Length: 171
Image (cartoon, rainbow, N blue to C red):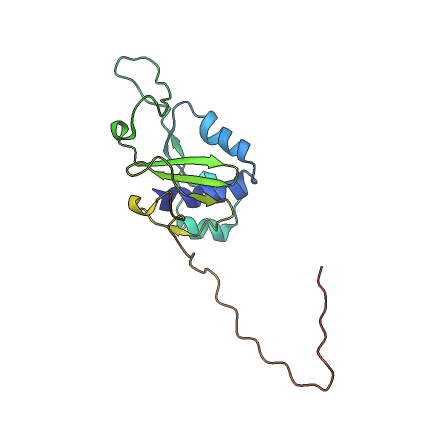
């Protein structure tokens, strides 16, 4: 579900994998024999504690792969490709494709392509889990992230002076 996977993947890209898509893809795709049963909070290693708390509510759980599968005939399990089975045959509802500019989220129930969520998207963003909202013809269905810090206080007006205002350049 996008509401679970996208925050973990966006934060993992920034913090654990330090914006290195090749290393992230190797970890998520190449280094697992079959695939993922669940993405865990270990993907948040290196993220600020406040962000981890916002995404997990303080809970922690490990990522789990499907590497311990046993086939009915005892042969070693093999990774399936998209051409091996249809999404319906595998009861798959979502696909995630890692691109240099973001994560393409595909509602496999409705489409073969989907909108791309930019890597710079705040991981606290809440996404819809309704497959009908993930159209390739529309932007990703995101809700503005909830502020975790209080809004800044209203500035106090500066006292009036006879000299003209000055501005300072900041580097």
